[in-house]
Length: 279
Image (tube, rainbow, N blue to C red; front, side, top):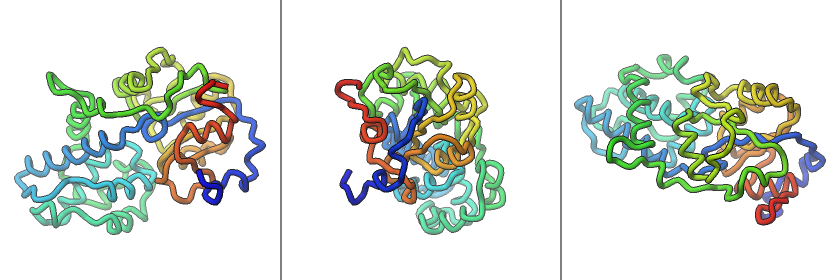
């Protein structure tokens, strides 16, 4: 990271003393941007066509993805597909090319709302598509069904070190359920990472919320975690938690006080850890 882009040296945070590390998974430990964006696109296109509407455009874009991920209500990618379908349907147009809003319009539409999107989406859009059905098909696309390989096979590890080599006890706070976490473990070669060190959506813990951070710290006796996340939902979860430190990974959270291009850089700079030697 170039010196002029590095807020760390001027933040006063170099004297940190964390007692554990908590990772988000997607965009932090696992590069799944391509796979999940492809799943969202396919869901939108399939459901639009299935509803008897005119599929004349691609169902998703990286520009839309940036807007959704900068809003704290969309940590779950299947929620994005569901919300986008209902927003497009609410336009009244049968043509997807006309029904899909621009990124700027999505940002304006979402500005008044916060919290879990299912709680406020009916105020922002006419609900036509079923969230449970969207989730079931989306997970089949990602994990694979029958002879069809899942999109997860294109994911890549962003941290190529064994979890035991990390400088502090490590934990996971993810929007994945157990099935998808198992796939992330394969991607990372962390199959032996203990399940008890994870907070997941199938445990009833959903971002944005401090609940996952509180659960892990309470269970293992920590007070000062350093939490690595890449979306607004991660930052909101940390802000609600109110202890320790947060570092944004990647470029989605543009206004983050502390931001790094990747998790290895963050670990090296914040904790003086060498990925090659594990010390």
